[in-house]
Length: 140
Image 1 (tube, rainbow, N blue to C red):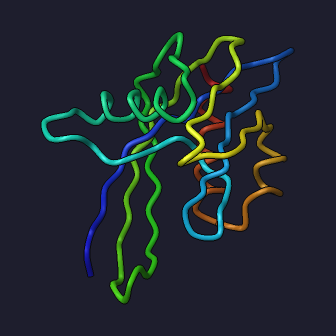
Image 2: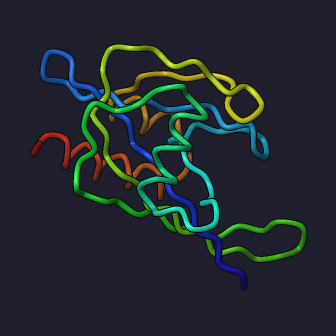
Image 3: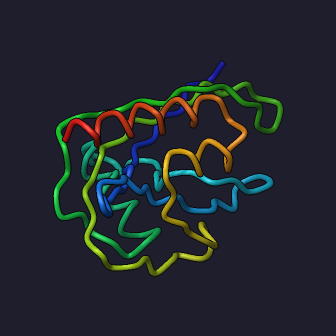
């Protein structure tokens, strides 16, 4: 089994006490909702990778990046290889600016509540990550 690591951002904003999370439609595979993420460049830190990927995919920069890191792990098959994927995310408070998408990687976006994310994704790992992110934002 091969291991693959990526880093990303869980962008959020709070409107009238309700947390909303920025989800992007990723073109990879059949397409799915997810948080902005990607692979590091050589010598790049986890946080620098996450913020660069957020900027590349959405054109956005956060107002505040929280200290809390949340991880997501899963396995999948790619070209006959079994891949163990680990993605570490940083929670980031965003302003009111809307994304400008990098359409070769992501083709749509939505600000979603936790309940909307739980309906939009079939992946239990992503549902768990969103639930943990929601809890952390409520404590922020």
